[in-house]
Image (cartoon, rainbow, N blue to C red; front, side, top):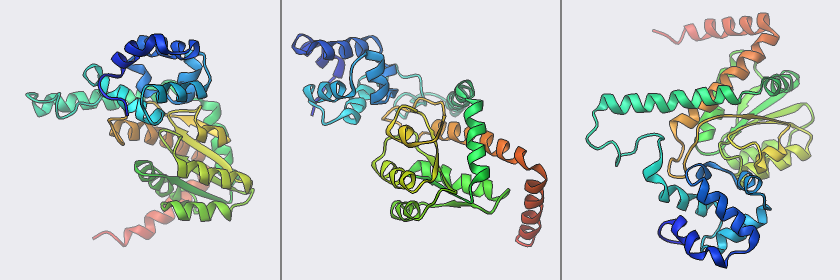
Length: 283
């Protein structure tokens, strides 16, 4: 596997690259910090080459694949990143200063998501949820936490939303879906193996798919009927950052508001029934 600064490696091997690989190298050298947040499809499009060229380029530099290459970029640009503060770059800062920096990063993630918001896509997603007889909320890892929150939130307005956390159960549910079912899937990358396998089965069964992701041009995006794009740039070094989760939660909140606007009376009655039932749980 490649070691050291990835951009130094690119410079050293530049004249050994093919013409297409040089186009990728040129783009990476000019966009060192931004490139760590890009999917392979986005990098291919921006550098004007095929995805297969990107894969060959990564292997030529000594990396097993694109994800390993992105991690190397993140390590090589860690000193440039303005994102969430890490243990190393908060040394000597007060807690108040760290809190302000985190607030700025989290607020920026929500603001960026608002800028990326496609209201037509939100309305289409709400249409699919409204027509569905059953909606399975899914994700993997940290994104499953958001999927569980989605099922919890929508359950206040309708009884047809369910969280499915285990990857095997997700596949079982997908295999039993029909044309009146829908999947609400959360995946920051849009490119996990379990997600792709599950969505392929759901799509074959005729279910409609809504994907909330950072990367619309991802394998998951290609399988979805509707893609809602969240903001927040998450480095490979930031596994499951809070900012990325907040961006997804903001989109969830917008989608929930649009869903409830379709049947305000029914949603309000449902919330009142649930509130009354839960009242006995409080001391």
